[in-house]
Length: 199
Image (cartoon, rainbow, N blue to C red):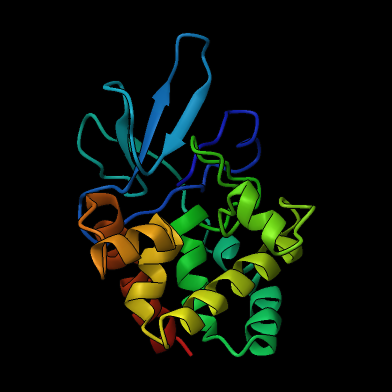
């Protein structure tokens, strides 16, 4: 999930994740103190869809896309994915779904950085500088590799556990029936296929 203040967004409004359809996956909200928040899981009625299309219909916020941001961390991702023998396209897909390549992203639940590591996950993988892109990707890829091992290469179960936790996957003996997790899986798998085609 992504939550950013206006100060965090200085110099870059391209912080948003969109689908190829008209429906936005990122929402914007300005609270009573004037803080601008972005989220892919809106928790207040004042959130508005945020999309990049300049012909956006009324009621939709607009932004200028920044394709360069989605390639800025390619060398780190490539190096880390190769060292841990994880599909580079899968790592990129997870990062895009988790933070849309914003290294200082912070979710309302406390997940941090590019791969949205929870504090306990960061500690587990010895990530002390969670907003440092290299350290964050290192910890996130280690975690993803461990989940792939745990679920014997089953990408869907590994991704479900990355999003909802292994306890939930075990409890339901498969992908948990959470709307957030189902939507997350759909997005990551779609991005994964996109990045595989771009190779």
